[in-house]
Image (cartoon, rainbow over the protein chains, first blue to last red):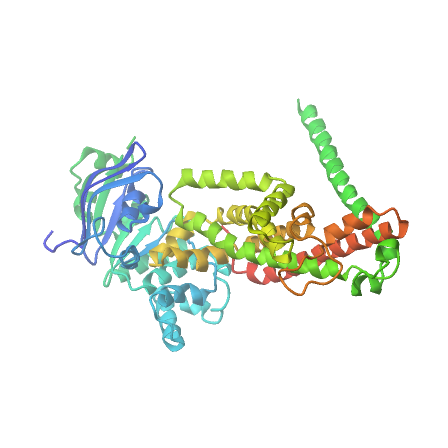
Length: 253
Length: 285
């Protein structure tokens, strides 16, 4: 990689109890690109993603060793507040988890806890982020409605807007379209392509076609190990590893 | 074989209907018998006056002392238990998510405490009062009842908070919120209706319990004017009147029971109404 990677994972090992979930993971995730983590279910994709946000802290019996550098900071061995680390990354999960409040407050929540409480600023920012997620047109007259009244596809876009609202550098997405209809998935996918101009996107998916459509970089994982990584062209058109070839052909077992 | 499945279905349907009917009937019977015996003795005097000289011989007076006393006691105890119990329940479900074993231990002990009969709490409260030289008083009653209902309230809220999905916790954290912000701004809101229900369940236990207040709050015919005075309560008022040899006093016990029942009914209707307004923000998962 010519440029220094935005996220550098070095010798990451993660255990849950006695299970070895991530085995010596070393990956580089370049800035302002979409990096797709690909692999069969249970291979540790989601765990890798969550360890970048240190959400793995929340699970009992998890032991992590190694380094994860975000920019220059090693987030596994740092003195900064965990909240400050997490704020640098927006998270989009498998299904939308809107906060139990109104549409407006879902976006304003992140702004308020980071100290922006003036009504005028809040109004402007909320509109800005809803527009970014292509949701403003649909909800501008019902901002006070509960977020639970939105459809699943709208909720996922709301979650995207909410994630952007805390001004992150990185977007972590964990199979964000798996619960959505094709149209909403399409909106989210297209949005990612727009967003990479300003953000570094890490997308976990098991949908091969989705990966082919939008990936700049691909990391292929199997059984907790990184089998292959590189640019999308390299990995899709000219895979080096036998297991990658099999997976791409669909003859994997 | 098909035949048998249909017969089975029928038998179980009848069984389930019968069980439902028995429960409903029992409930109706209780309410009906209280109303039937209590309504004739009900009068404005009953509700608006404290017992006069000859009250316990069937003469004039009412149970205002017990109504006011019960209200003071149960509201005081519920509010106190809530302000201690809510942080505990949130702490268990937000701050301690990682500590499964510890949580299970805490839940186990809370369940044990829930099962302890209220007379034991009464005796405990009484023992502490003697140790510190306290007399029976409203304050002693409130503290005893608070201790008695905290496990009920915490476990009630805990059961609701437990159902908040992990994804919501992660969503809140990934916005950079602290544990407390997650607890009070996300978990509390998501579980609001259930938390109110837990509060009212405990309130019902507080207002309906006789044994825990027997030694601690005492009984008096006047309305308390300070926390340090003994206080009458409805369950004890029912108890004393029901044990009277005089017929008229005994029917008044049922009138007191009607008051107690209405109290609880009123609170539950009020809560249904208020929670409905907040329920709409709850996310269905």
